[in-house]
Length: 97
Image 1: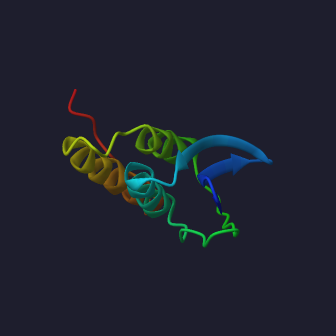
Image 2: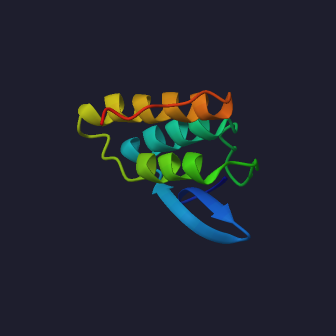
Image 3: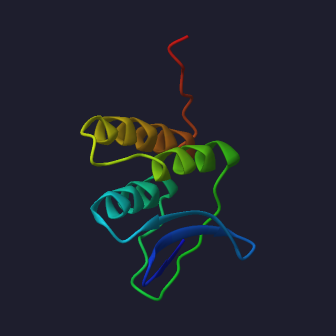
């Protein structure tokens, strides 16, 4: 996870996987993404790294696409972060199907 003057990005092997911009919605997404990955949000010009599973990465990508101008995005982001934390702790998640 990197933060530069335009926003916060998640990278793999030097390639950007997703990016959120430095606006209110983007920074809300960045905070949720960092919580989901259990990685501290880096300061401007800095980066932090971690090892995440593909399932967790899927949730991070979903969070990065949320529009936080919509109030329901906070609820969905909370659910995705909770699932990601559960995955890191070895807990199983269930779908409502």
